[in-house]
Image (cartoon, rainbow, N blue to C red; front, side, top):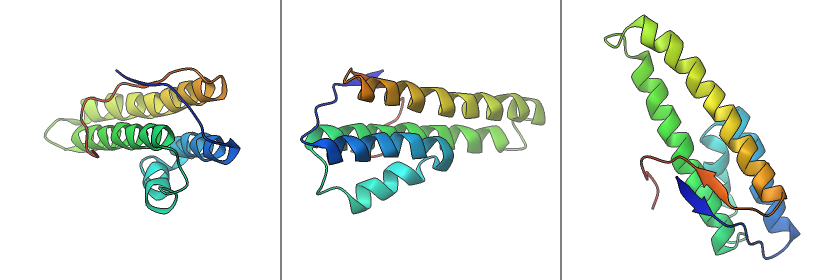
Length: 116
C-alpha cells in the first residue's frame, strides 16, 4: 500500500486533486490521465504524486477487468470479479477523497506501477 501525505501549495491544487478523485469513480483511469496531461504544471510535486498513484491504481483495476472478461477464465469469475472491481473502484477513491479533505495520508493498494 503506497502512502502519500497531501501537502498542497494552494486551494486550486487541492481542488484539482479532489476533483480528480471524484471523477475517477465515474471515469476510471481517464480522470487522472487527463489531469496529468493538462494540469501537470499547476500541481505541486506531492499532488502530482497522488494523481500519478491514482492513475496506477486505476490502470491496475482496468487490467483486472480485462483479465476477468477473458472467456477462458470463465463467466463465473468474470461475473463475480467485475462487480468486486467496481466496488473497489468506488471505495478507494472515496477513502482517498476523505483523507485529502482531512489532510491525512492518501493510500492506494497499487500492485503495479504503470506510470513512473
